[in-house]
Every structure is written in structure tokens, then in C-alpha cells.
Length: 363
Image (cartoon, rainbow, N blue to C red):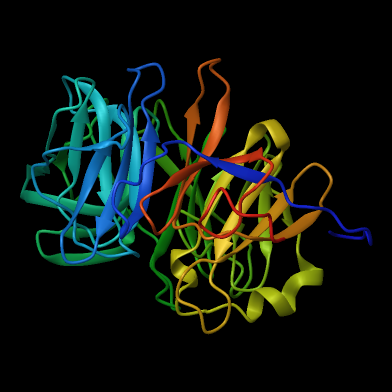
């Protein structure tokens, strides 16, 4: 890894449930409710059957009845945020194909989540974030019109109300016509990431608008591939770009971490890279990116960055989604989901390779 020349065995992983949800179940996302409730959800897509939410309170987790099921598909990744519908706290679950958003309350009842307002019947975002006491949405379907270079924001503490959509939005249109791919809150700002451009939102408590925006000098092809491939730590925000692993610090400094791996990164399956996924292991100072090698559809290779030492490890892991959860000691851990109905705790075992926790570690 990095400048080291010794061989190291990759850490293993363990199954979090011994029984698969379904042998063809592809995990598309997950969410821990944190202090709202002792609940954890995950999305699972089963070809020819359904794409629904599951409640991790049994072995295997049980399926939930949804207002509207998500579109079936491995790449229809889910993005979840804990917020409110103006009355109830819960989870807003969005999908990359801009399906009808779902709301899961603290009793784990699921319903359609209609984001509407004057002149707006239904906003269906692909990604979202909570920032400035509002839900911020991007890459949206607005009443049948795709607006992938606009951000919208909700009313205060009311994620499904946009009183005036014409004033509660901002455009980041550029001559490159690259769509918004990532929204991530980071300290006192929110990153709005495109493939070739980077913007920062900041709150304006006493302004006529709730947010101000500025662009960060970036460079062609150095922005984030995906929302799911962008991770915020305590001091930086990290993403995978077409040519590198890049981070933005609190002082506005951009850092490239993987110059020595550019041939590896640029040889990945670029068609599938918009669906790369990342997860953060805070106890180990690691960020994991699962990516598809050239000519491969599934994300079977993992790049693990130690953001304290700069070391980068290449592991054999098949993952389609990551999310953080709290263990019984209230320690934040990382869960990864694969393609066979299993999901795992990462970096805590003595065995595991690809999408099986019991076989020998490969690399």
C-alpha cells in the first residue's frame, strides 16, 4: 500500500445475519435510525420480483409493505436521510431512478412521501441531504420534467413542503451540462458535486434566501462520480473521480490521494463508475470504495484509503451498498451489502472474500 513494499493480509468481514434475505437479493442501500429509534432498514432488489425495504430485526430481515415499490435494478441505489414531514420524524428514502420517495416513521410504517407546494404536484429527487434545517434535493423529476442541474430546498423542518418551487431552488448549470451527482453536508457547508464542477452551499440566517453558493476551482473530470461514492469524515469530504480519489478540507484545499493508482482507476469500467459506492470505517480511519474493474459489471474490487496515513489497499470485495450502523455499545460501524442476500460488518473478521464471509481472505 502507498509507499510500503511489504505484503499485508486484508481484514475480513462477518455476516450480520446468518440467513440470506433471498439468494438473488441485491442490497441497494441501508440506514440506521440512530437516536430516533432502535431500527435499521435496508433496500433489496430481487430480479423479476420486487425492490423493497427490509427491517433488520429478524433473521432474515422481514420485508416492509411500501406505498410504492422502487424500480427493480442493481444500480437503482437508495439514498436515505433522517428528517421530518413537518409533523413526524423518520427516514426519507430516495432512489437513483427518481421513484416515488418513501417515508418511514419511527414505528417503521412506510408511506409515499409527496414533496409538493404551489404549482408543484410531485418532486421526485434522486439524492438528498439535510442542511440548514431543510431537506435539500437534487437530480429531480419535477412533475415529469427532469432537472438534473438544479437543487431544491424544503421549508424549515418540513421535508415534503416546498411553498414556492420557483424561489426555493438554485441552478448550477454550466456549459459542460454535467448533472449534479453528490450532495454532502460537511461542517458548515454542503458540497454540491458535479463531474467537472464543485459548488459549496452556505447558510444565510438573516438573508432573503436561506443559502448562498460559490464555486470551488476544480478541473475537468475531478468531481465526484456519485452520491453513494462520496463520504464526509470529521475533517474532510472524500470522493472517487474518473482519475483519482480527491478530498476537500475545511480550509478549501483539494488533495489528490491516488496519483500512483491512476492507471488502475482509469482502467475501471467507466460505464458503471457512476454507481460506485463508498463507506466509512471511523474506528480504523478507513474509507472503502467498491468499484467495477474493466469489463466487469459488478463492483468486485475495493480500494481502501487510510486517510490518516495515506495508504491505499486493494481488496477483493463484492459490494453494492454501504451504510453505517451503531453496534450494541453505540460504536459506529460499517455495513456492506452484496449480491446474494447477505450483508456484513466490515473490517472485523478473520475470513471473507468477494461476497462470502466464510471463505479464505483473498487480498
